[in-house]
Length: 622
Ligand SMILES: Cc1cc2nc3c(=O)[nH]c(=O)nc-3n(C[C@H](O)[C@H](O)[C@H](O)COP(=O)(O)OP(=O)(O)OC[C@H]3O[C@@H](n4cnc5c(N)ncnc54)[C@H](O)[C@@H]3O)c2cc1C
Ligand code: SF4
Image 1 (tube, rainbow, N blue to C red):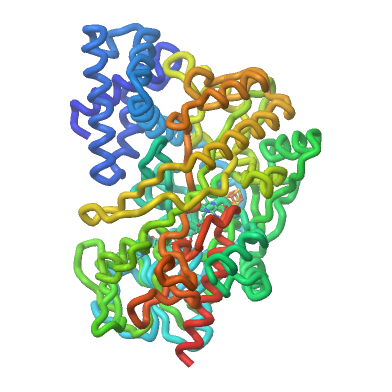
Image 2: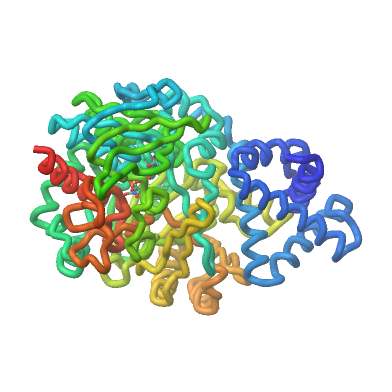
């Protein structure tokens, strides 16, 4: 960053985490933040710079002095005053705070995190993959089928096709990561390297929603939490009956769901590695008489080091880079990494291949008559638009996010939420009735400090008490009101949450609060302005009731639906077999084809539907 921006970051640091009260020295803070911010895409980097410079200017304007020249209490007051100007300003200050606390916390806990990463031998070695970096790939490749994206959907499709004797090349924008890198790389570099846009992607709205997406060989399964739920029967029936998606008929999908669970080796979290965060959730649910259970996960050999979101250092989490992709390679598939597909090539209404770009901008053409697009719910419509195949009016629409909220509880004794499985236990009590699925979810050590309220001494106090904090999250089954658009070639995601879904979030927040108090929390952090910490259930209810939806802190990890598959050609860009309408030879097999929110963590649903689509593609090749 520029020296001016560095000074502004340092000033922000002295206000947020004053060195006088034990916060990091300004130079250390600048180094920690710079390490992350330098890895952000240019737009976000500029936004961070503009944000810290505006805060520096606000200090001059309101006090006549720069932030570092004020005493710590006045610095915190300046931040509070700027944040209180309105919901947009509040969101801007909170956004900046989240970014710098992520970077600061990751570095502060880096030694502990890496020690835990290296505490055990990997459960298994890296898988044998036929993977070539695009820089070493020939510029023209010919094959039968090319798959864009190596994540949940792409990997499953690749395996089915390769095993059916179809020649397969998988093109993946991200790179391959090794377990040794997960064991030794600084947490913030893992975070920035494994996610699209260094993990700072958002869906704009009121409130905006943090929307991280993986980018690696293995896609988002490399960074996901390993939770493996089958789609509820009611959801499968809705897809079949309302959308004419026969693939989702429960009797037909069951075999693919079984196959996914077998491939992923799904099993409930063992109690001995769950950790106290999950145990508190289960104990509280039992006391309340609510249905709850350890989460089924794809993590054979998990040691509970809570780093799933930045790559498993034990190779225990069984993402598709460790099963479906090596199985596809064993059957002859080849993967080209660091190859961003720019467009699908087609002529006279028939697919002819794809053009991808290496990181240096040079082209690779992979020529094939079958293209399987599996770039994820945000990038799949972008690719189709870039290719001149985005004519369907519903492409990019119908985006459901399954938005998530999180509450934290402060206990009188240690919880160490990060010593255990990252996502470990679930409460199902409100799932069918309200579409609310509650999951005990922690973050890698140090990387969740954005849940803590306040600035200055108050915030530092919370960081000190972090070991005593438990975090429970909930996701709500939402309507597909979001959209993706291409603006100057960049994905612009818009999501204005529906009123009915805000009501579900309120149910979720109250239920989480009840669980935390039942578990023994002395206070609950709501994230709501004006009532950030509450000490009783009535206080929480009142805070939730009065809350302005625009001030909710939301994140989402499950975007789906932007190229919905179904029978109605007016509504669904993809037909019920998985073919993109309007062109021959292009299929879609990822989160985009889910007609509506899966209402559970969706990787199993996506993989099962991808297997079903791939069977159809293999059938077309016979
Ligand atoms: C932090 C996090 C935790 C999660 N936890 C869970 C969980 O516990 N359980 C669960 O069920 N779900 C979870 N999910 C969601 C789940 O992982 C995703 O829904 C799923 O992986 C999506 O599958 P996909 O095939 O659509 O896309 P992805 O798995 O995202 O794969 C798409 C791939 O395509 C690549 N790509 C995109 N554009 C291009 C291009 N133009 N050229 C080449 N390659 C391209 C991307 O780099 C990416 O690797 C989580 C998600 C996140 C972010
Ligand atoms: S908690 Fe996650 S990162 Fe740690 S060993 Fe288990 S699966 Fe791997």
